[in-house]
Amino acid sequence: MTPPPRLLIADDEEVFLQSTADLLRQEGFDVDAAMDGAEAARLLRANPYDVFISDISMPGNPDLAVLQELRGGRAPGAANAGIPVILMTGYPSAQTAISAINLSVLAYLVKPMEFQELLEQVRRGVAQRRIQQAVAGSARRIQDWAGEMGQLASGFQNAPGSVPVQSLLGAMLGRMGETLLDMKHLVDLSQGQDPGAAVCSVQHCPRLESYHQILQEGIEVLERTKGAFKSRHLEDLRHRMESAMEPAKN
Image (cartoon, rainbow, N blue to C red):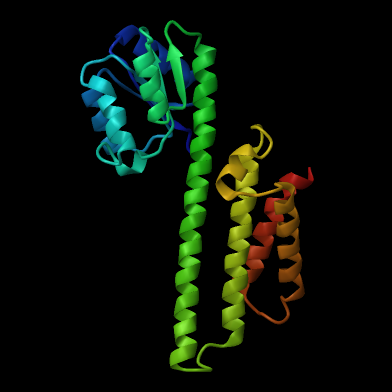
């Protein structure tokens, strides 16, 4: 089961902090709360989060210090680098608004605000974070694939004939299948947002619907070659790809 999205909210107004955290928990989020910048930084170092919600004017956060460190890739916590950030303030100013833009903030909200306004931005941030994580995972798998192909190429060069062609093609088909599943996952994550905007911005894709066609073609290739390449792993992959297609058919 997928764990609920994890949020960190930081604000020195205790009543606002605790009531807002409780409302977000009622919406199904896992929420940690911090009363100042130092506590927020400590929690960011210790835990991964999907969205960080922060008051601008609070102790331990001069000139948005916590966010400056977060965006600079320093402490607090490399695991949270790039996470969506929602800033809140009861004293809006041009200076803080410009800082928010320069630090790639998801939203700049002015207190008092409706909870639904905050909730909408939190959900938007969670969706954005899920896409970031999916793209990062896909990039790691592509790097693994490149390393595996490099090792096989070295094997051919050092000892021609030592690596069966079936092994090479089987490895390639398996990795191609994983990439297609990554594409399908990105398509699913993009549902409910602007048509294809989130995925196309990171994958530079011209048409999301083409992903489904590619996935279907991959399944057909695995079906046609199952007699030539006997591999339980490839058979498992075909079943996974077929399962991934089921939501798209409904």
